[in-house]
Image 1 (cartoon, rainbow, N blue to C red):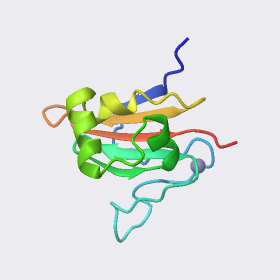
Image 2: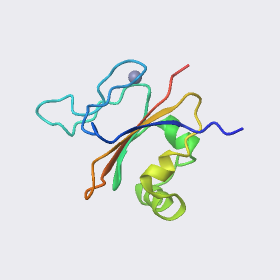
Image 3: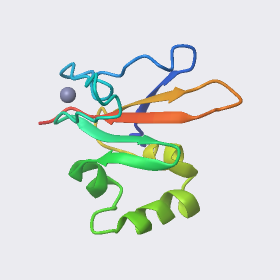
Length: 120
Ligand SMILES: [Zn+2]
């Protein structure tokens, strides 16, 4: 039985700030001076967009067997073996993991991806 990450998609309100569903931390855009600043809480697995990972937790790396890989090797994984960052992050199998995928409308079709899972 597969235990794939649960996905939520934001398409209309794709710009809505994303908060951790487990503790309420606003993981991106919380700093008014630097809106690209990332605030990863203990539940955050990854924060990424279509061209790069902004944040990867140890749990995420272990789950997808990315630990020990260089950034270039990780990039090769999602470019060559998975269907991009979106496809790679869909492969997470941590219990009760949740992914929020925010897609800006066409023609941009730019995606941002946030992953969370409860801690023990
Ligand atoms: Zn949290």
